[in-house]
Structure formats: structure tokens, C-alpha cells
Image (cartoon, rainbow, N blue to C red; front, side, top):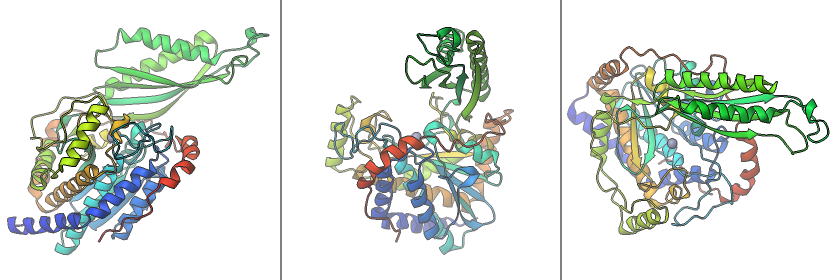
Length: 486
Ligand SMILES: [Zn+2]
């Protein structure tokens, strides 16, 4: 237990570290923005983040759980153990110049950040360094673990971390995520999802000369599509099923011996998503039978719904209020309004007020692979204001502010809120006790049972070709100046 005046001194010290590093936090966020790396190919991003943590005294393990672009950085020793985790991947076809309120790619058709995961990782690393400096200076007991989580956009890595026991000794976890607001929430926030490649295997033949000799794998993909379309009528109303055909053959005169469709099945509960996926699998088997082909199913991702904890939300909220909204300039607000108009969002300008903490939130239909973490330990979320409110993620408009002073100010605010929250959790046992008590009530009778197949291996080749194609074109835009925390 730390006295109130000690606690205030500790926190002021940590917030001052973040404040003194405004320029470095901006450089870090911008460096990641221009790397613009797709999930599982975040090699430059992960190396920079892990190097910065190592330079600042963390012991860093790279490549955890078989992910070349994951890392875990540890500081301190003993209990309590507080974890922070976030993602730093970009999206295909999301290259967007920053600071212009119109669609303008940095590199035509290239990947890029149009959500703000570059800011996520900058906040995590900056907040972690600020908290560690305070831990060292004031002799604070406990362990801080910083997890770099690859491939969030495809919902990949964190269920593997959980499966490998990386959260087994963790008392509380925090997820930082970019937003148009400065806020935290609690309750069920995201959907569960299972996504898988269904690959049909047939036999090739000349499509005009001897089509009767072929067994058409693409036919099976089409029939599976029809089967799932018929099933939609009989799915519960809030379930989702969506797909892309990733391989449908090579040319029309060669009947495809191989065709692949990538399906994602979602629902509000893990069991619901699992059951829907199993129905999809039976439809695939039916399609294979109808076309005299065979089918193999490779699970790509399998995540629980995200649930954030009330006790941690209360601590996060107090720190957000302590830090306060960034002071936006008139120019920043004018840019936000211009961008909102161009992106056909509501023209509200930048958020001026901190969002109050209210009761359990409404569950929405996106997913995040941090869901599995949130069922094994109490998990809190810090939403920080590095993007323009109302502009839809993955739209070019959500990339246009990501290397501007709006993003930079939001990152500093987020890093401060994170550092303050971590220090509260390390120094005040009552906070952790309340987090654990509310977590027990929230979880109730639900038993965590991974959706991820036990023998599943990380899909490390995902996005490799696309990234190799664009990286040489993106490299000339990389920032020259490397961040170094003072
Ligand atoms: Zn995200």
C-alpha cells in the first residue's frame, strides 16, 4: 500500500517522462505508420518496438509462440504481474498520405495504416517505458510484461499466447487501442469468430475437350457458397458468415483441380461461433460430395468475444480524467472537419470532452484476437484520441490523420493514461482485488475452452507475397529519424 501523496509523486514522475518524450513518441508512431506492414509480416515494426524496449532496460524475448513478429518484454520482478498487449499491423490497399483531407495513396495499391495500430504500439511502448522508469526510481515491486501481438486484422496471435500459458501468471491485462475519443468501456464488446480456409481438391482436365474427366474444385466452392446462403435463413439473427475466394483456378480452359474459399463465422458467444463453423464445415463436406472432390479445412483464426472488466475500467477512467483531453488547436479541428466532410462522416470536429464511464457496453459485431486473454485474466481497455471521430476504420479517411499532430497528441495522452493505470495496479492492491472480484462475477459459470485447435500452428506465411511485392516501393518513404527516449 502506497500513501496518497507517494502515489501522486510516482504518477507525476511517470507522466513527466511521457511529456518529456513527446517528440520521440511521435517519431515512433510515425515510423510504424510508414512501415505499414501487414499482419504476420510486421518485421520492421516488431524489431523497432522490441529494440526500443530493450534499450530502455526491458528483457526482451522475440519470436514468442512461434510468431517471428511477436515479442514479450519484461521489467521488474515478483507480483503483481501486469500485462499490456497490442497490435501494429496495417491493411491491404490502405496506403494513405497523412495530413491531406483527400484520398491520396503514398504508394498506389500498397498496404497501409487506416485505423491507427501504429499509434497503438507507440502508446504501449511509451507508457511501458514511463511506468518502468517510475518502478525503478521508486523501487516499486511487481512485474510489467509487454506483449507485441501480430496479425490482429486476421485475428491471429493472442489465442496462441494464451494456449502457451503466457498469461498464466498475469494478474491483470490492459489493451490499448486508437479511437476518436478518450475512453474506456466494460462488458462484452466484440464478437467471437472462427475463420478457416476450405480447400477443395479435384482433378484437372481440358475444359472444352474432355470436361467429363475433370472433378471441378471451383464448383465445390460455388456449392458451398449456395449452401451457406440457404443456411442464413436459419442462423440466429446476430450471427455472421462472410467469405472471399482466395483461389478459384488459373485460366478457363483448365478445370481447377484446387480451389479455396476463406470463410469467417461470427457470433456473440464462443460456442455460437464454434457451432456455426461446424455447420459450415458440414456444408463444405456436402459440396465436396456433390462434386466428387475432397475438402481440407485449415483454421486461420479462432477467437473468443472480447469482454472488458469493470474494476479495471474504473482505474483506467480515473487516469484518463487525470490526464485530460489533449488541447486541440483551431487548425487541428479545422482539418478534422474537412476530413469528416470528405469521408462522408458527421462533421463534429475533434472530441473535446472525456467520455464518462457508464454501465456495461452494448456488444458489437467486430472481433479482436485479444478476446481469449479477456476470459483468463481481468482485461481493461484504454481508448486514446489519435484519430478523427466518426471516420470508419479501413477507409482512406482513417489514415489521413495518423501521422499528424492529432495522432501525436492522442498518443502522448494514451501513454500517460497507460503508465498511470499500470502504476495504480502495481501500488494499490485494492484495485487488483476489485478487478478480480468483478471479473469472477462477469465470467460466472462460463468455462474458457479455446476455440483454437490444439495442434494449430501460426500461419507465418500469411501476407508474405503481398508485402514482398510492396515493401521495396514503400521503403523510400520510411522515416529517417529513429526515436530515442530521453
Ligand atoms: Zn484495431
